[in-house]
Amino acid sequence: MPIPLTINGTARQIDAPEETPLLWVLRDELGLTGTKYGCGVGACGACTVHIDGEAVRSCQVTLGDAWGEVTTIEGLGTPDALHVLQTAWLRHQVAQCGYCQSGQIMQAADLLSQNPNPSDDEIDAAMSGNLCRCGTYNRIRAAIHDAAGQMQEASL
Image (cartoon, rainbow, N blue to C red; front, side):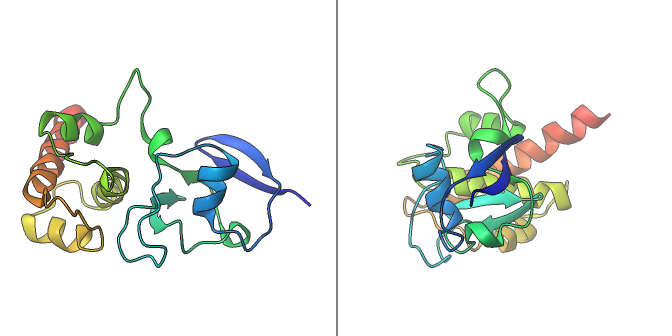
């Protein structure tokens, strides 16, 4: 029996077993490959998506346990209107290999939704579960500060 799920604002009927990790539903069933498989145990953050606005590791949430609307990196912005974090990421040339970046951006979006002006320590704490093997942590922090500033200017 198909399972109803709203993903990036679109209602879907997913025909997969309830115990299937959400990550595989997104990638294999729906072709949303921006969400990456990194470790499979929720330790690296590459598979971070939002469920009802909360950053979660999609490798650790089953289809049957998804409790609300899912937003992936593809739904954070559009090709014509990137999310402020996506433009900050580009401006600060954060990505090197790029593999972790969708998870990093999704985690940062959750942080900024809760704390619109985070300190370095708050950014480091919020982002500590997202690993970057290329070590672009200083650029990530700078991009988050930049995006926070852009969001504050836009709200004035």
